[in-house]
Image 1 (cartoon, rainbow, N blue to C red):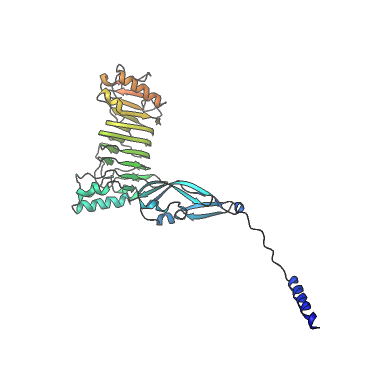
Image 2 (cartoon, rainbow, N blue to C red):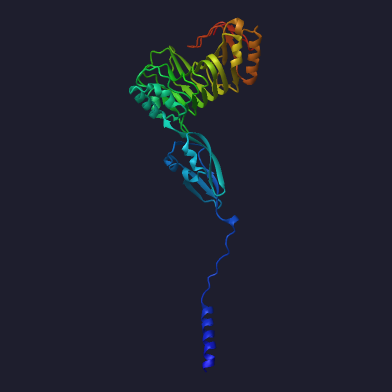
Length: 383
């Protein structure tokens, strides 16, 4: 009997074990079929302060997955390169997760314009004004709305002769709404004065809405450029004030060296959208109403003026000519070969614009006298 006990017990154990339920695991999902992020929806432009990731932690992108699910994640968690905040500037970055990648332009700025203006005031008050240029050299500045209520770009509490900005980059915030320029309390004639070199205005959308402190000024400029190599790009400037006793210029350029670039800009509501008194200028893709005016002293000045891809918003009810060249008849008249070549080239580069020349120009009220025909159309003498 003892010899048969072990086999029977073993048989009993085997029977009991076989009656227990057995969990059957599914085969592993192939990697190609796992749920993955397939798209990232984000703003095209994002701002962040130098060496500060907190702003990126509070900005979110939407993630779309392969199973159609959607979630939101902070921009900082999607950065492919976490060192982008270590230096100021405009960075072309990649946001990525799993299979998804999307390019974004990141503006890493040193300071806001309000903070900068306050610092400049403090430096001047403490006798450190001589150090302004070196302090500002290469700075990337975010133009905030608060700063525009304080007055012109160069506004500081003490009138000084120190050269202020140099190689400074001013840019409006991503997805910028229209900011109002009210002018502050002091008298001014320029919303922004650029006497320094290598200044850039980018991504600004500003409307002149009040002349606080400057009601007595007869000429009001949006941007007045006297420094070298200024750039005004990707921006919109408008004038919302009507005053027949004033002449409004959108951009006024009067330089001795270098080249001013105005590119992809809208200029509306000014008597003269853009005027060039002297200097080399490259104007590209500017949309405007009013007139663009060039003042010519010598035929060689034509070599410094370039106009390409510009569009007028004039309805011809008040302004017949979109581009006016002002100078003596022996410089800009139809008998001057170099002038004729320039006009023909500019007309080809800017289809739809009407060009004219004059020996004098009065913009307040659009009174223009002594016309010379240069575009082959019917031009009335005196407007």
